[in-house]
Amino acid sequence: MTSLWDIKGRVAIVTGASSGIGDRFVRVLAAAGAQVVAAARRLDRLEALAAEVPGVVPVACDVADDEACRALVRTALDRFGRIDVLVNNAGLSDAPWKAEEEPFDEYRKVIEVNLNACFVLAALVAPAMLEAGRGSVINIGSAHSFVGSSPNNQAAYVISKHGVLGLTRELGLQWAKRGIRVNAICPGYFETELTSGMFEEDSSGLAWITRNTPMRRAGELSELDGSLLFLASDASSYVTGQTIVVDGGWTVR
Image (cartoon, rainbow, N blue to C red; front, side, top):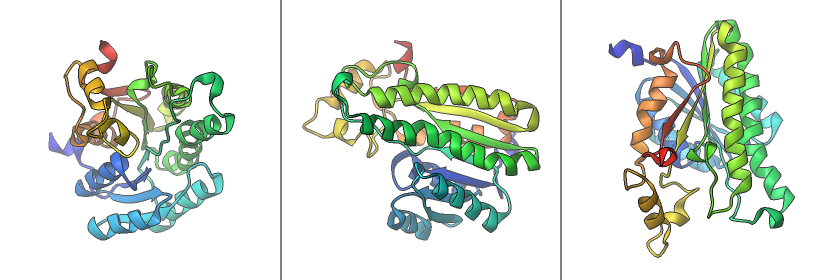
């Protein structure tokens, strides 16, 4: 049974790899034997990660820049000759604006990173995956791919994460016959740089998360490991266009 989860020798790209969920995913994939191209804007953090974790190649990349995305994919192909897994993890969140007051440029920036870049990178890795007849694209959504964020008022984030599920389903359908699986992981509340303000000692955020999560706690990053390895490996060989929600019951309240 363990062979189902074996990803030794596979090549993965992980975006948003300089902190939080992305950093964790790089470590998990590398520990499982994959070669991991870790991408983010903060190259110094990626280099520190690569120095600590064998099998990691750091690449500076702003996923909102199409040319940078092309260079990222070329680097992976030039180095390893293949791409087996793409984890579209890079993400931003808008400030808690009321929709009528949110600056349009901030809204567009969040959509560009959280949604548009997922399509661009999936389209860029697709030719190599299609030629190989196999591949797994893993998009990172959110519990807010299903519900609004009120009282936090993060319109761009919520809209982008809803869009990630539509992207996952459409690409999953388009590539199903040709060997590329496209799925999503939707985390609930985990402590990362993106959510750090809600976990501060003097913040009411953690109490709000605890009170509103049926399991009465935030998630631990390690609790995302199983979903990642399932979708990256042959254990999910007949799964595409689907979403795994890891949210302590947030969306079933």
